[in-house]
Length: 276
Image (cartoon, rainbow, N blue to C red; front, top):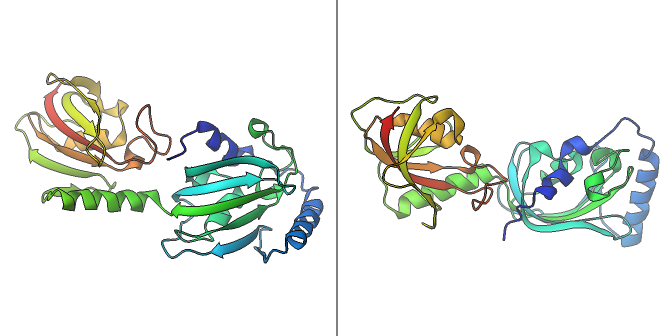
């Protein structure tokens, strides 16, 4: 089951870190080395000061600093006190603490191991009040990287859906949106700021419907909806019909919305009834 708790992101978020005072560095280093010795760990150290243990490097894709990944994790202090844990947590590496951002990139998909993060790569001297983490605290994370890049994962899932459903006329745009024009229409063609009336059915890759309009449709401004709609509806003329296959980054992102979980591909059958 995916972890969608917002607190997760307020805990990991990079902006919580403060590096104005590096006075904890010598003590952190001493404490980490004592911990490694006591636990008889075979740890390596990066140039930034991060310590890591790779139990299994993995064999799949390796994430980059801008990847959105999926991990199982447990975070705790050097004394073993548990801070937080979760399964299938979705993280945007560009927004989290430096120690996790760097450390997760050491693994390939399917890999697992341990990161020992000094305070200057975590929450600095300020700590994190949301998680009651004190300033100067060393954090230890046991992690397993289950998905290395949600963008690639969504792409693979969409292509499989297209193949399984024998969709032969799907087109991919530069943004990563896939769209199918079953009927182009003959009326006015909207721009991404137009007000339009659209009848639609929204569902997941397993065909579970999460939202559906009446046949009369719903009116809205295209600059006030998800990016996949703002772009996708503009490929149709008034009277047109088709399907949009929207990756998470053009939909509801990693946090999701309501009954829509984060990281999900969304499919919409749409009918552009009117450009208002």
